[in-house]
Length: 331
Image (cartoon, rainbow, N blue to C red; front, side, top):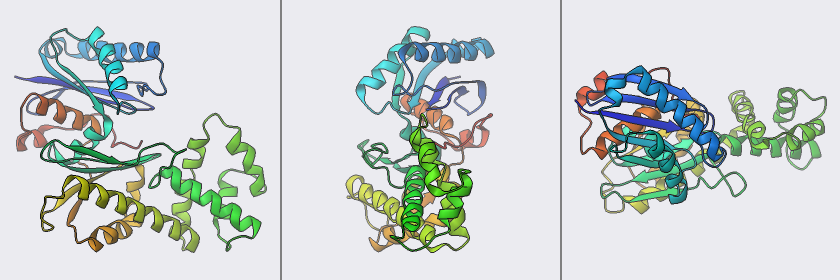
């Protein structure tokens, strides 16, 4: 029996599971953040040591028979970061076990396609459009961080809502209920009182991104400004997807359906974005299938580990595999 270890590491938590080739989870562990851009070297070592030790203690027999480790880590999209994580894992895993560290977008994709080519659109606090084709060629659009531009994200929606509220307050743009809704959400007497709350917090990105649901709620209630913000973000997502389809799947017939996996908290309200996304793609006469992942990204890391072993994920794997105490990626 083949046993593999899959790891999903992000900015708030890191999950690892050991799974056999049939999809049965035999051990699971969860620790804190492991994004190398926000976690120092000593904390990385400490957290991965805790993760691996817990897994070994849960099922030592399976741990000692591991044949592959695949870690999809947020912030590890570049070679240096991947090597950093690989070096940490090499110190605490059996010397003979191959270790692959990759962008976490890959495991989000495989959580929806079970190892097949396609595109994943991640839209949570941040956003990125990522894909891989049949030849193994990869591509991305966006995901460059909120200071450069991260449209199609919770941050972008919150930021646009904040700008609209202040423009209405200043009398520069038409009135919107976002003025009152954001003021109420931030618990301030007047909208300008929100400025210290935004500029003086440790992580302004988080508080701005938290305004995304406020904008979506206003759109639900018919606020035209909020609805236009949602529409424009959906259009951007659609443009990002079609751009990557042209880059990676240009040799495909327009009649072939490209799977597009939707991951991240924004797509809990897919109903708000779906029409705008699909309108852009259909305008280009490209057929896609929007896929809501059946499993969490950590399951995608297991799929990637089995693929690294040269194994295809059979139908019975999908029947046996069940996420244990995990959630579909929000980040």
